[in-house]
Length: 561
Image (cartoon, rainbow, N blue to C red; front, side, top):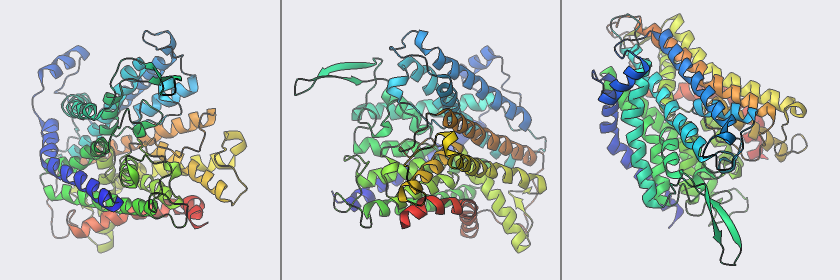
């Protein structure tokens, strides 16, 4: 099939199914988080863990619950890895080293799923299922809960500062949303030939008579939640490029849908909860413009390689699976870097300089198009508040967002939440490159100014952008097993996840203490094409002013060389 036709067909299927699911799933999630009654299993769970579901929390209580739950999760996952060698069903795997266990525990709890190891070699099936897969559910549920808490702060009318109950939101997100959808996705993957097994591997005899062995495991179930929860960490080194996890072009389209469906439909949830569907459609429009623009750019650069040795009728096929081609690879790559997922079905390091640079830029935009589960929506809402503040000041209108005044405290929390990631990316990259002999940075070595050294800089920039944005994908030419990378990227993932959450919840708390004000003609509307353009410009401008110098030193210089 012609690559252009294949690209249009795949994108068309994805967009059609997302459009069909937008209203029912978006409204269902709104009902889940606003329901007055709990399901019987949920009530039993609350009784066992002694949680009062009727007790609401202020932003400080909500934030403390998020941090406490995540801390316990990190500790449990760390101990599970360190004790792996002595636990039952270890499949012969030894205990994970302290630095790698530290990095991995933070990675999966922070919804990053950065993997500095070969999972089929290092992790047992028990660790995968009891540790990593569980955190794929829990970390996604935390993101959903924080997004809902921010929406409650926006729509709060009493002024009492209450944001709901974190434990209830966590439970409902897991039981009512993530579990049912992941089961559907896993069953579909099984119909396409994905592997689901409790065995660790099997031996075989090749056609030439040689003996070999192959790894198997719970791939379909892990693949389903890693995509649906925008996690990204797989059970195989080849991740979603491996035929045991992503067997066919049809399964590839389904996995792209899994990446996008909750972040996209959450904009409908937002519009439904605030009582004005135009608000959600405006946010969705901004996400769509950025996502489709990035898809067009990456697909164009990978289809026409500007003089690089081309294959498959001019397409850059290095590092891509034949069964997916350029179209399926570009669609997956843009979706995974735009949703903080980090799963890959192609080698991003093998993309052209411009195509790989576009993927880095997609992460540096803050992954708000459409962003991760929950994180994309609350990231976009923070940008929306900044946009209405700036826009209101420019035209002399009152900075007000859905009836809530945006004053000094509110804009400070919003600004702090979006400044965390750039600080971590730029500081981490600068230290790593400057102190390369100490940090162990090698990458693609070369004399300063050569394409090899420039690409090495891009690899480091990608690594810290991925870690700080809780994405998890990487340029494969960078070795990150040194203590420096294990520790620095671990802290980048930790701070990049939880500092913005704290600032977002603080912002939600400030909004929740205000009573809703009536909108007037002096209030800047927060829906429609004009405001959508302002919000798009804000998202692009914030990233552009922050990261253009770093991009110029890496991907842009490499593309022009």
